[in-house]
Image (tube, rainbow, N blue to C red):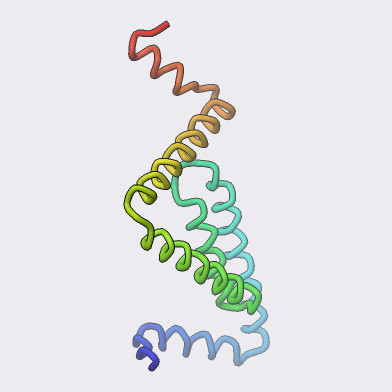
Length: 136
């Protein structure tokens, strides 16, 4: 059973079909989607080591590419399938294991933030924390 397509989505689909009907429009659309997707993916890749949604931005860029490119649609489907499988697996685990995995993710993200600040700006959060606690 298929879900009904929302009206706004049908409108976008119809506009895209009109653009693709003209050979020049089809080429312009492909180039525009390619450039926009590349910019968004590039911003996401730069943001991956920083705190924030780097991977999410990359996936949004991939979704933009998926509008025009079949390989991007396949890669987006592959990514969605594996993220959902990982999420289902995590939710089936007992809470102590989920807590441990959450703690490991927190430690990893904290290490990435610490390392990126230390290497890019020379800020040592560990040393600042020790100074605040009054330790030498």
